[in-house]
Length: 234
Image: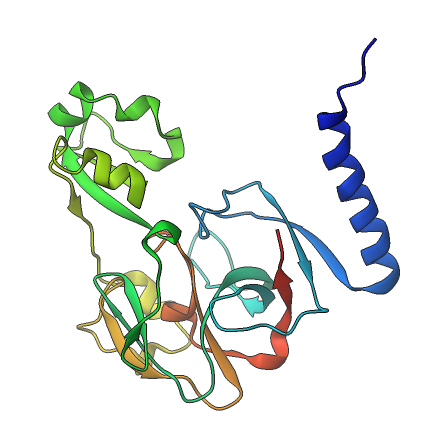
């Protein structure tokens, strides 16, 4: 029987990384439990992080943070989270149409982002997009007049005219009542039009790349810098 080395190599790498990391604390293998960093990482992906690298702005980092309480679904708890580092002490952060601006400068790259869009059920059924995206990126049922699609920029550009896609932007709604920074959030702000807000001294501000499907600093607030555990390297 021939051994397929391209199957073995990733297993060996993960095994060695786990062993070395366990001995030195220098590496962390973490399984993502949410789609917040799509399109780069999907839920269930394994990421590798290290605390040997100092985090820089725009890095994807992992850190300790308390999750948001969702009544009837889950209680707040402290857990390891992953997100993009977009602001440090005294930076002014603002989102316009889902794009992040730090101190007035837009810092996002289109290829890193994912947004939610609406299209008609009729156009959705006529198109071939359902075969190109995973089922978790589609929300539709017989009671809905619209289909909701979570798309990266490549698929948006490909289908925007055929499906007459409209970007979805929502208020915080019930999330606001559970937010630890409820009093700092203007009620006119939304998930995609937010701020400006200043990052407190000794804290950082992070965002998920999947801008309409991420629990991040927009609702949780800035996080103490000492909570950072490392930088994602894969």
